[in-house]
Image 1: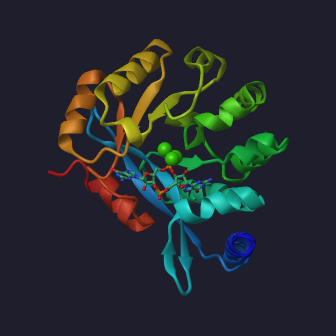
Image 2: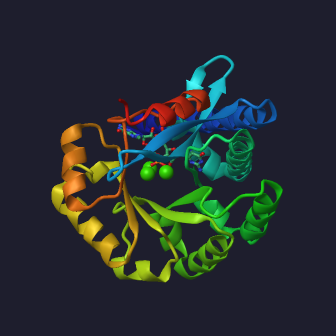
Length: 272
Ligand code: C2E
Ligand code: CA
Ligand code: CA
Ligand code: CA
């Protein structure tokens, strides 16, 4: 029995070691990726239910790994968050999105606002607002050019601090959205303490009419816009339209697209 227990312990520690090794390897690779500019943004169209037009896009990071090809953010963002590398990655995303807004303005291409995702770590950093103010200046951003998506759990981690930072970002002209709304444990009434514009209904319950109705009602009473994400079929679009949802983001219209394809899409949509 003793022998058995020893083996078990051995196996256990070996598998932990293996997972630490994998993690370290990934961390090293992520650092390299930042240096070698292996990241890029894809853009998923957001469509206004009322007008049927593209009103903007969510920028989603992609990692073009030299050997492994395209790596999903679902795989590397959690590791980046644990190691703190997410701060560098977010910085890259912010720059890339702002540069794109400026480029379009110069070329006279209109295709709405770009939404970026900011991780929870940004909200424990005192210079976030100052850094964003610098971006506004450098890229001559106009109010509404950039929408910032933060998850419900980010704001609920430290509600007072989050409210203060969000005030600062709003004053700079950024549009603010709560991402993955409904997945957290938030006291819905506390929403009124956050100076936000939009609720994004998480794709995990876009299929659940009672839940969707409740969130949209809440949004209406707080005068917030709603974006439903992960919408994959026309039936769901119709249901959401009836309930008063404002904007749809999902495979029913388009997957996240490389930049040029997104601009093409925005100008051809609605088709006909
Ligand atoms: P998220 O912010 O909730 O992004 C929405 C995810 O849903 C995207 O996955 C998108 O491709 C996917 N999606 C959109 N419509 C549909 C649909 O109709 N059906 C299905 N099945 N999926 C749909 P993606 O691009 O793999 O990103 C996963 C997560 O990684 C994001 O979830 C976000 O938490 C994180 N992430 C992505 N890009 C960034 C970034 O630039 N910075 C940070 N900090 N996190 C990011
Ligand atoms: Ca998001
Ligand atoms: Ca989301
Ligand atoms: Ca999510």
